[in-house]
Length: 358
Image (cartoon, rainbow, N blue to C red):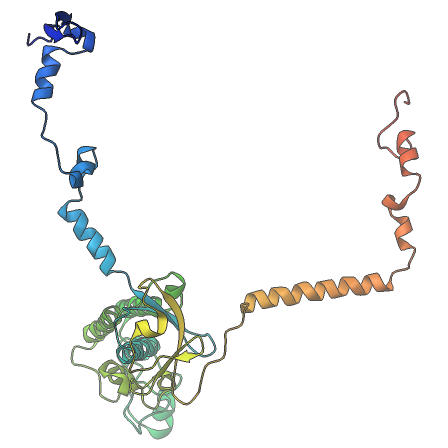
């Protein structure tokens, strides 16, 4: 019966070979359930048993995402410098050579130095204009009154107090553009990126340099003079020669990378120094050659050291006061009163009272 009603079937008993008619409802079977059982799916192989139990097999997108996540696992190098004034994160792989890693770190460091220098130079350019040619430096008002030289003054003129620039700035609107570009660059190269666990990339650094070049091109379509420091710094690291920022530049062929008191040998691989685990994070120091192994970092930070010094100084002052106090000074304390319990029960001290006493 397709409607699912019970039907009879013959069960041959093992006693005497007699046939006994029993209703199928006794075994919980119906025609509809029997028909559904006959149309069930074939048995799956043992390897696909998990799919039959309701666990869906990973699709191509899921497998691709898992593979991509595995490819993104990198060795993180936390680069620091002597004095702990600057730091940044960089990602590499264990199969990369130490020579390639050091050269990449040096490129990142030199580009960061250029961006930091350009941020200050761009602000000066926006406020006081391009640099004067060599031999023409000097305060404008002195050159006008004393030497009788003609000083060109545009609408956005603002005299340079150092006398190195023409004083013709870029205007209020372009100054805002320069400031936004500088703030963006300073934020990307700041130490806050390392504390936020964000690694730097050469692509990101080059993007900040491109933004700076674009801002300069908007303000000066005809280009800056070649003796201007902004023009020289945008051309490459060589443009920083003779400046204070040049001291932060490193040579990719001679720079050294140290970690845990041992140097990264250029002929070896990264995994030979930090291990084969691609999820490793190490703290390393990048420095110029000839300085030897860098000093170990202090166990406590500068703020923690100041807090500890303040605590011990306060403790020392308390101990001095205790040493100057009399030996029997403690007798005046309430906890040293031998009659405190009696007075409290009698209601003389304002504390608890014995039963019946008012």
